Image 1 (cartoon, one colour):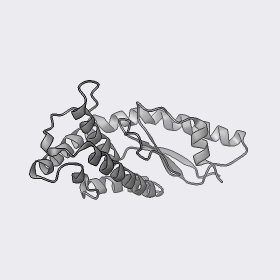
Image 2 (cartoon, rainbow, N blue to C red; image 1 turned 30 degrees about the horizontal axis):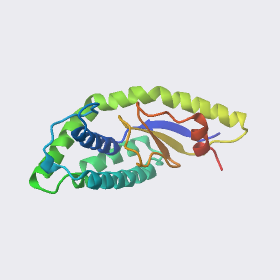
Image 3 (cartoon, helix red, strand yellow; image 1 turned 90 degrees about the vertical axis):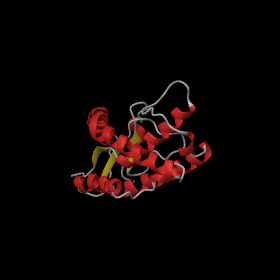
Image 4 (cartoon, rainbow, N blue to C red; image 1 turned 135 degrees about the horizontal axis):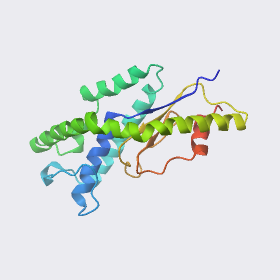
Length: 199
C-alpha cells in the first residue's frame, strides 16, 4: 500500500510575510490595494530595495525550514511547530522595518493586527479555498499514477496556502510542498505529478 498523502497547511509565518509585503505594496500604490490596507508612517519603512531583499531571503529561509518539518508524520506536530515558531519569535520579522522605536512598535502592532485576522477569518478562508483542492488533486494524482503504471512517493506532500500571491522571485515549491493562493494560477496536475512521483 502506498503511503502517499496530500494535505493543506497554512503557515502563520509565511502568511505574515505576505501580509507585510502587501503593506509595503499598498504604501506605494494609489489604487488596486491589497489586504491589509493600514496607514503607515514613512519613518517605519525600509527602502523598497532593502525590504524586497530582506523579505525574499526571510521567506526562502522560512519556506525551507517549514518544508523540513512538514515531512513529520504527526499532523499536530507540524501545526504546533509553526505556532511555536510564531509565539517564540523564531524568525526576525522586525528586520522588515526600520530599527528605530517607531519601527519596532509598528512591527508589534502589525503582528497583533495579523493575529486577529489569522485566528479569525484568515485560516477559515484558507481552508475553504483549499479543502476541496486537496481531494481533487489527490484523486487526480492517484489516477495519473495508475495510468502511468508508476507510484507516488511514500511520504506527504503539502499545499502551503497563503491568502494572497507572494511577490515574484519568492520560492514557491520544492520536493515537499507548493505554495498556493486564491489569486494564483493553480498548478497543472502534470506539474504536481512530476514532484510527487517516485523516481
